[in-house]
Amino acid sequence: MKEKRLVKFQKWIACGSLSIGFCVIIFFSFSFMEESIPDKIWIEQGKEENFDFNLPVTGEVEQEGLEVFGNQSPAVEQDKIKLDLQKSFSLKSKEQGTYSIVCRLFGLFPIKEVALEVVEEAKVVPCGIPVGIYVKTDGILIIGTGTVTGSDGMNYEPAENLVKSGDYVKTVNDQVIATKEDLIEKINQCQGEAVVLGVLREDEFIHLKVQPVQVSEDEYKLGIWVRDDLAGVGTMTFYDGQGAYGALGHPVSDLDTGMKVSMGEGTLYEAEVAGITKGEKGSPGEIAGVITYLDQYRLGTVEENTNVGIYGHLEQTPQKIGQETYLPVGLKQDIEEGEATVISTVSGERREYSIVITDMDYNSENKGILFQVTDPELLSLTGGIVQGMSGSPILQNGKVIGAVTHVFVQDASKGYGIFIENMLQH
Image 1 (cartoon, one colour):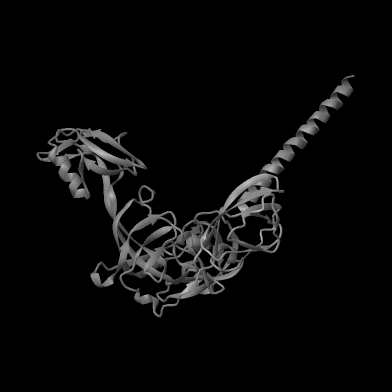
Image 2: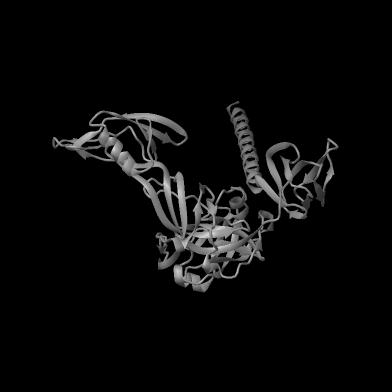
């Protein structure tokens, strides 16, 4: 009897293991399918765009205004088209607009809804040149807190556990401030009375009451480290026919807080490469640049700091570009694994260097293209990708397809890039 019960128990274990295994397979299948299909697809107006996902997934899309070639079949509703994503197909629309493709695994289980946007054909000038960036912060950025020695010789930390690194001081006692000097002046005017700071913390505006410490006869301090501007060198990616430009492919972040900077007004300048620290395993290299803050070297404005780059408008064409060459934009579906090039001015001369695209993540915000540097000259000069090359445009088959954004710390020859369409739809 005991032997029979043991056998039965073992059968239950086997059935339970199979059920768990099946659930795990389903879970990873869903995850794989979801990652393999873009959250958003662009197609150019009037152009037939080809897709080949090779996945056991069906998609259902509105028929009005959209032409589908290759494998469409009648859907349950007459005004919709059903797609078989295991086969190649093409999409085309004569008009700009937005559609939605509902995707299901095996035609049954909902996976995701893909936004399909029909856009105008875009052409840009790929740049790859160093630019100087100077911006004022939108408010006074708090970097951290510290100890203040009062006029009585005692140490105080008046702002500890009140303000946080990354806060932006916008007002003092309800009076708007714009510079560090404004903040210092308002604190000294308090004559030892507590002040109320209007602080923007992430997306919330809060009021914090802080007691200043008197450090001399007419001087008071809050014990906070602050910054109201920043400057650096990056790489311009492109500009278009209206003079709008994009650069970096990732946000400008504060060196101390590591957080994206909330920008006020900013200016773009010409810059020169002054030196290169070669990238090595475990130690990313960098480009040292020189910015000349003179009107004749002013290129334009800095107006936006986003997760996919900085943006503004040019007032003059950068001299390093030389003869302007507008190239078409390559969308995600145009990109292939294999040979490509990156434009950079690391040697002092603007030129293309060879790379190989090894993988793609369609849904990554700014790490969608994985590539490896193969150009012997660039490897000899920099070791591959170094800090300061972010924004260098990536070209393939005569199209601008993306920009360099990150380097592998353990292998400088490898890097990530952002899809150019992500930069264009900021």
